[in-house]
Structure formats: C-alpha cells, structure tokens
Length: 88
Image 1 (cartoon, rainbow, N blue to C red):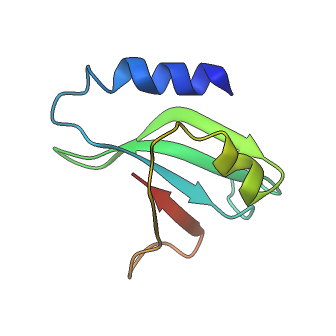
Image 2 (cartoon, helix red, strand yellow):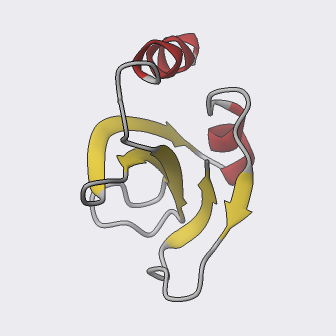
C-alpha cells in the first residue's frame, strides 16, 4: 500500500504534461477475474494504461489503497461497462 503511494508522489513531478488517473474496474476483467483492480492510466498525448495496479477483494479495499488527495469522478458516459469509478 505505502509503496504505491510513494511511487505516485515521486512520479507526479516527472510526468510533465501527462495527467495520471486511476481507473477502478469491477471484478469481471479478463486479466484479474474475481478481483477488483485499479490501474493507473496517463493521458496526453494519447491515453495509456500503466503497469501500476492495485488489487483487492472489494471496491472499498482497493479505493483505500489509492494515493491520497484524489477525487472520485465516477463513471463517464461511454465508459467500458467494466469500469466502476475513475479517480483523478
């Protein structure tokens, strides 16, 4: 848990114009079936998933491990049905 938060704080200063966001997915993904997963994505110049992930048995447990200071913006119209929330 602390490792993810420390990585996020360190990297936020080196991303330049890239905007980090955490996409939280229902436990129905093909790569992590049965587990809730949050994966950090970067925006600009094109959206890109990173290899930084958080796994847990519940939405609450995964969200508790997200870096501090984020805001839950929920789902957006047109999001893939597997997406439960997005945190920025």
